[in-house]
Image (cartoon, rainbow, N blue to C red; front, side, top):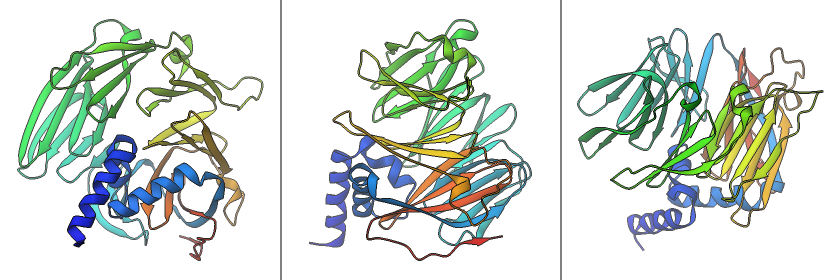
Length: 353
């Protein structure tokens, strides 16, 4: 069997067997489709064999966000955007611009400053701007919510681009869009009042699929949808409680309240949760509804357990051969952590710069 034919077969297997056709894991990976597929099985079937090891940490200043794309970890600070190689942690490119967030795919870049979102198409340098702050970039499609609660979709593929408004939400502050999730051809939109809309297909007739009916959302600073329209959100800590609370809705989706939650990152079927005390929780919900999880604290895996300001501000992950790189942002450091599985230990040493 030729290499290209074998690659096509593995891609087909991944598209049939992985969440969202494997797109999320493939975008955050240095692997071919075969490697991505086997790494997904490690997450699903071998969560209990994960070993955690700190590889490196670097000191940073005024970093606002981090994102993995292929073999780069993109570090967004107040003065520039730096691209680090995920393996060596060396800087490969610097963009001299100040923004609050920056992401890119093969054909699209998205830049967010305090007020505007700029979407640029790489193949012809076309740029469009929006007034807003919420966006979701997946593959070569970007969804943006502007300040009038209009949801836009920008597509760039085969040297073609399309910009289209697909949803407008009317109402007051309770109708503000707080998150977007993409599952194959479906778009899910979460409102502050707990209502979730779904739009399907080219006609984009949105319908209400769930009303979470919770007042907790008005006190939350972190929202994230994952696996279609499961929802995780932060709640204030009360009496020192830090335990998550899971509720299954009538549609079999999970509503999870997390005291002390500071960030949440979906990664295919995996969910990473970061907390104010430095704790990191990794959760996987299988098709059988069984939930596997593991947890560790960023303070416990380094040579120096005294970490000032250990609150987790952002998490992202890169899939590598039979392992997973976890990049963790705190106020003054970025940590690179390697997650391996039993009988597959890495001998990478720890360095701090």
